[in-house]
Length: 576
Image (spheres, rainbow, N blue to C red):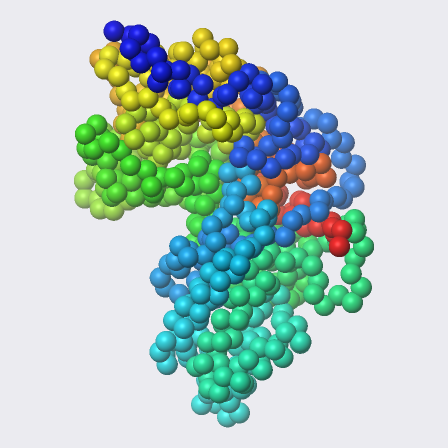
């Protein structure tokens, strides 16, 4: 019996999933460089009819004029905070972020630039600083290692050691030299404590609560003549070091970067490019690479993903962790050991597997190996990150697949098509699977409901192409006793518009599309700067697109192009 005959209420609910009416669907390809982009979950401009297209690289005339927008003050993300504390205090265990304020998002990326810090948030940072600073001086050995001052040397008193520590620690925490008046306050705090251990503890606690640590501050605290509103200001070497470090390491600058900043060389494009090369070769870059791909592909939900044990008995926390680890290992391998190309990330017929993933992918562990290992996969079933279990399982329900979640993720984050959020009055809970009915048969009703068709022609046309993968990412040939139909249709990307058969073919189409290449460049831009692109970023985007294309889409060269762009190297002064 057809599901439509005995589950009408449930079908009506799922038929309007993510669309409350025709007027609600205004999805379109994002505006070209030079057109302002508004904040939102899709990370792009809104307006226009569903499926409206616009060229990514037209509409801007670049004649050498430098420009950059006014940017909001941003608080460190949870990961930036955790990594910064880890590196400042030389911690060997991960820093918990469970008790500090949650992140906001700009597009798919964490960026705390919208909501002001609340009283509760301030208290949470205070509590965290107290806990971390106490642990940092918990033993004499820990105190000595942190202070880094040999008090057996003649003249090395507690006061001189503390003074040196404040200069060194403060410069890395603030990403600039500590000003004289600031240092005086920290010295007084240390002196009033009465002993080295308590003094250093209080100094660290105070540094970790300072706005100069908690925020990306890019004004000049020592300037006696503040710049007028609207003035275009080049960032100094310290500010560039901070931008570069949080971009490529999601943490504070290291000593080498601070030395370069002190020498004033980072204002030169060649010096920035050299630092990008050095920093990407450092293991600390793995955090940023993993963070970008986790947020870009919306894998942050994976740690809390569960599956119905009756339907998916192999799914477990250990398997879920292995899924996350696979994607992290794969993207870092491509970026560090491989060719770094976007096409490889999207189409590689191999991955790096461990644990239960061998069974999930239906391949044998290579003889004599333990731990994560690179494995060739069936190229008719797997191609890059979009067919990895992490993406497939996190964009599925507990008991069934989700063409909507998979389709929306591709449209918003890979094609940069702006889609509205579902209206608040829409019940978007999916119906339970019904015996004898396939997911495609259920979602076919989207096309028959006029108020839903505008959005879901785009969404389902892509999402249903992933139906060869069940809710935990296992490749399947049948569903509900019927052969799986993996045909799909791309609507919102003119360059690759038309039918495709299965996710592997879709990945290959996406990898060769200029729209995708420029979308990914935009996504890295947003990740690097913690904001959406605006009208004054047009020429910076043009330069990035050109460099990315010239490198045959080597993401490492894209990152260097971002770091040397006007948008990265300049700021515009806002109104007081």
